[in-house]
Image 1 (cartoon, helix red, strand yellow):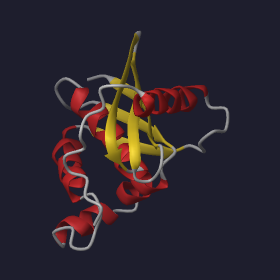
Image 2 (cartoon, helix red, strand yellow):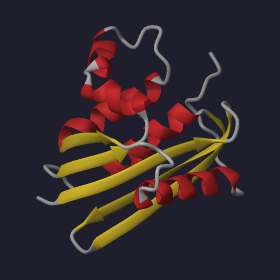
Image 3 (cartoon, rainbow, N blue to C red):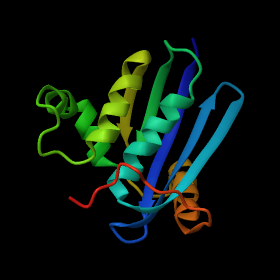
Amino acid sequence: MANVTVYTDGSSRGNPGPGGYGVVMMAGKHRKELSEGFKRTTNNRMELLSVIVALETLKGGGHTVRIYSDSKYVVDSVEKGWVFNWQKKAFKGKKNPDLWKRFLVIYPKNRVLFTWVKGHDGNALNERCDELAVDAALGTGLRDDIGYSSD
């Protein structure tokens, strides 16, 4: 199976506000960019959705996937095991349970490793993801973020 490198980022223009995600995926000589915008969402939802979409895009399973993200929310939730404890407690009192449940379906299909990168610090691929996310948030034809709740 392939080794896949993924950079992800999320953006919201206001929190909540219009938002988007950006993803750059690379495996061997292949490179793919993904982005999408939503009418009303939060930055954390877009950060998490970018990871989910990247993992859902992979064909098959068993890949080693290194995800680079500037989101402490996402990286720490997984790497420190918080999300697995939230799952045991049915996400009671936690934000974004719809997205975390979706993440937990796709996560075990590959060997997923997270690396936190400092945002807006000159990392070209992180900057590209930010550009994709911001452009998506400011774009036209924004979708409804069905799972978003202002609770």
